[in-house]
Image (cartoon, rainbow over all chains, first blue to last red; front, top):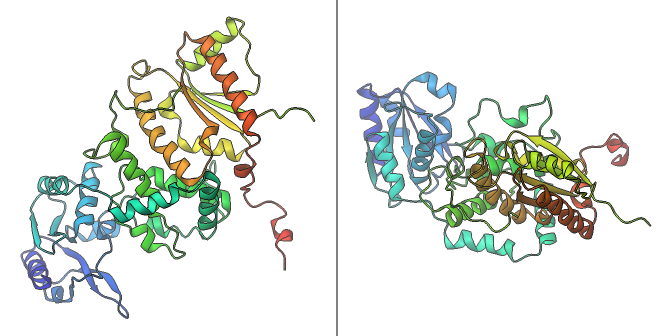
Length: 262
Length: 151
């Protein structure tokens, strides 16, 4: 499989179809890092194994990457979903990117255009695993006060480094609301109120867009279980609005049901 | 000791609930005076952060109200808002924020009496819940923070 990726990358680069191939490579120690291959002879540095989990789609919207020229990207399932969502948000036009798709069963998937990406993503809908649902359930069985204390405790570790934002492919706004300071929307210091507001806002701005890649949780230097907030919303959207929505909060159904509006 | 009077912020839409609240006044219907009304163009404009800010600045309860479904002045603002509230309310509950303190309602421009009832019930409920110190006390860094945490 690794060889196939290298071969495909080499072909794309030598034919001039793309200017850069974004993939995984050996980093320091046993770590894996993102690689930006620009010469066909460097394609052999690309690797693919179980350590390669980072959501590379985050690089596609960076202006530094766009400046290089057309990219090809090594895309596992969560990257394909991210690209699909970014396409829905009109971040790419047809022909802007090439995709070297990799299925969950580690097979190369041919995804020549954005339409095929959409179809492939639709064929593999986002569902929470039983384990993830159990983690949500664990918190839901607590009393409200216990949940509040749990989150205040977890969020008190937050140092407001915004690694969750930087690693998220969906957080591509050139100017994030946390940087708005006239008026100050989110409190700047890493203090309780600002932390709570930031994490509620992050989760809400990703509502219906998050692809559950878990990159925010992996990037968090203080191990806040951020994914739980996103997964709560993913579960709610599936229950209330159905699974098929591309961006549930940009759409509506006149028959949406709720039980709390008086 | 005097009875606790909750501070209530109401975020209402310009076209239905605000006009409805106006009708409450012109109909000479009395309701609890705890409520401070903030008028916004549409329920679709009621950003979830406005609610968080209200709690942070000392609100003990919040009322969010707008046009009934299918009555929106902008056709679909309240439908979008409803979706957002469904997700938002569940997220807040998941994080342990007291969602009993946020009351959502549809009040049309003709429902002056309903507005008075919504406010009175809300205030009664918030009074029973007591002050929302839990959230208020998540203070940002105070002026004397350095001296408190010195050495």
